[in-house]
Length: 230
Image (cartoon, rainbow, N blue to C red):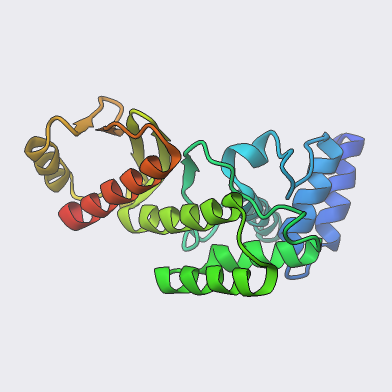
């Protein structure tokens, strides 16, 4: 902060928090305090709102941790190795408090799930959840499914995925976008399904009227793009 530059009381409070956060759970702690100051709701509850609902617990935590890193090194360049796709699919995805009451344990479970790379790891996590806490609520099942969807997005280079009953819209991460010619060939091969928009986004036309079909359809579409354009 430049010498003598005025800051608001809220900004001063947040900077003091930044100075004190140096533990493994710093991102979650900062997220909780930040949301409390803004009246944003419970970070890990069903009443999530604002940015946390838009980008998800995992991505919001990552954004905050990167902001802390930027302040500490004094510039805006942050490693891109662990980027997290943004997914909008219209499903409830969380670990309910009545399923895992302990807040710290829920934080740990979210973090572990976010770090998994393979389907086998996520399957093992699901089996562990059932063994420790009993049959999983639908929200937890969907949370694990979306984690798998995020892994496919990373492999495909998809930065943002919006899934609706009528299909999906994909936004590729610039430096990870597939070979344009291969993508065009895929569109030409299946013109009724795939379409390239003038803004560079890829549209998928489909009929996915329920939650299960949206999830299955999105995974199949991403798998096809990976196989055809990877």
